[in-house]
Length: 116
Length: 113
Image 1: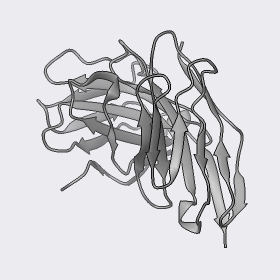
Image 2: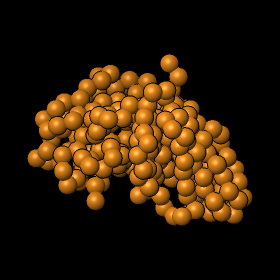
Image 3: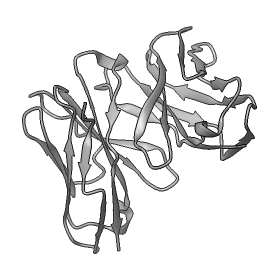
């Protein structure tokens, strides 16, 4: 079946511009996560959506970052007024939801963002 | 807060060599532990996991045992293949933390013929 998809796969933007990244989770997965991977670093948690509950935004690094999710489907991560330190690979993952910490998360291929 | 520490890389081995990749963690509760792998040109995928102390996760010839007394989850394989060349990430998911994953920095494994 289809896995998690993300678009665009690559994005080059100029400092100060806004960017929008998209994630399509696996159908039926109620949980959705965004992570960021900067060069030479592990993945950092950004935000978590579970069904209709309020999202966990505790990992967002600044108020320039925001994310939305429509029901249990597509999610968009928006970065406003991009800075060079935002350059990273942004990964989306989804899971069935409701099974707690034992759940397996399924990752998309990522969006590689470069801010010039 | 929670953290995962992996051994420094990269690691280069000859085919059929024994592999150990060290991973230790810090957590306040009883986390689940994971190894994820990223093959060249592919997305991150689960390799194996263990959800309680003394559990052993295994897949594709790889094994890791959840050791609470040493807070470790070392990855091992008895005989590596060229196709095992990839980046390996150790991660944990903590109780009450919305199942988010905390990752180590990852280690690149290269296996030469």
